[in-house]
Image 1 (cartoon, helix red, strand yellow):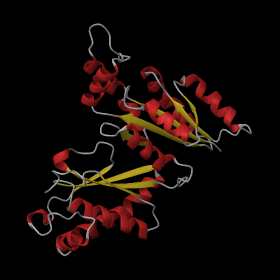
Image 2 (image 1 turned 90 degrees about the horizontal axis):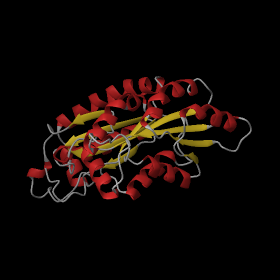
Image 3 (image 1 turned 90 degrees about the vertical axis):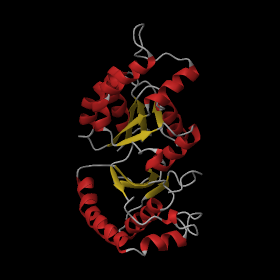
Image 4 (image 1 turned 45 degrees about the vertical axis):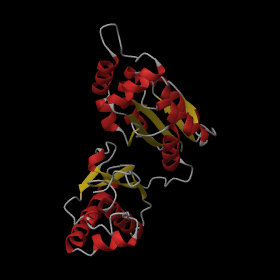
Amino acid sequence: MADILLITGLSGAGRSQAADDLEDLGWFVVDNMPTELIDKVVEIASVGSTLSKLALVVGTTTAQRNVIDVLKKLRLTSHRVRLLYLDATTAELVKRYGATRRKHPLAVDHLGVEQAIAQERVLLETVKGEADLVIDTSNLTVHQLKSKIGEIFAAGDQGDTMQVSVVSFGYKHGLPTDVDLVFDVRFLPNPHWDEKLRPFTGLEAPVRDYVMSHEVSRSFLAQLFAMLTTLLPAYKAEGKSYLTIAIGCTGGHHRSVVIAEQIVQWLTDNEQHPRVTHRDILRVDSGH
């Protein structure tokens, strides 16, 4: 059985970089893969080949739109098949194209870069909807993307177990776009207004104890855990490979961090192997 990863996404969002990172992890990578050849490559990998980990980059917009039919066929086989979609904001993509002076593949004489990106986004909306995992590279450096790819696709990943990630964030810095469930905890008592607690983060005992000392925090978590008890097996039964839970407060420094850590501990106690990211915890202006 082969591990097959189809890499799709917006032009300029990092498909080739992700492919390079996977190659460094020992995957066999084919860039700009024509969809009509995917079946043949998979067949070769299935017949006594050492190509047990295949990363196939589906390049053109047309090819990506055709990949859904291929994906459905592959998922009927015994292989582990996943679809990765690389995304980024329009503003970031425009900046990248300006820096590299490359032409967007959909840009024509009467269509500028921004319009071409918008058109491609619409054309690939269905592909994104079929993705097992969406990675927004807008705020990721090359090294951060490499680290994220390594965390998810390293050889020691959890096989057919659904991978659960938890991310804390601050609403003042924008919603994360590559998440499945979002919970707003700005209703919880705010440590920011206590000058003694303000310098600490949600990873430290004074803030954690303050947030968890309130009944509303404990009640919220009890209800959230009850919901996750139902949702996690249901998502897994539907074949979902990745689930990302986002917890937001105002700045991403205190409350969201505490709650995210509580969720991670609960998941761990329930035999999950969660990953956690505190997106905005180090922002200097992430106070309240």
